[in-house]
Image (cartoon, rainbow, N blue to C red; front, side):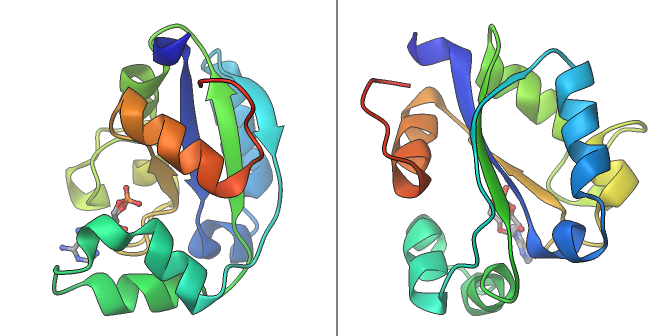
Length: 139
Ligand code: CMP
């Protein structure tokens, strides 16, 4: 069922602003089922590992520091065409470019503090799900 699951993270900005409940509500209303969920505070080392693909980018250090600055809520979500549909629901990485009604348009502050993460491929959904959860099957 590789095409039916994705991994999301409600980021520290959204959790600390008290937007977790509203964001989960938007996700459920859009037809996603929550398969796994937890609240966790990553160390800088763990955040660095999660975003390792970006380690050569100029924003990497700030991103790691932001993602380890407070609690986050990772979730595995299930829906047909989950990866693409979820990226549509959250909107562009930079909220300035996000469409009206998307989660980032509603809750993000800027390109770094952008409220929520969504996997960009089935392969990464699998890798990222395993980072946070003891997944025993292919997601
Ligand atoms: P995310 O979808 O979690 O994937 C990588 C993250 O890097 C992205 O969301 C942003 O939070 C961050 N990011 C991407 N581009 C930039 C940028 N130009 N400046 C700062 N942060 C960025």
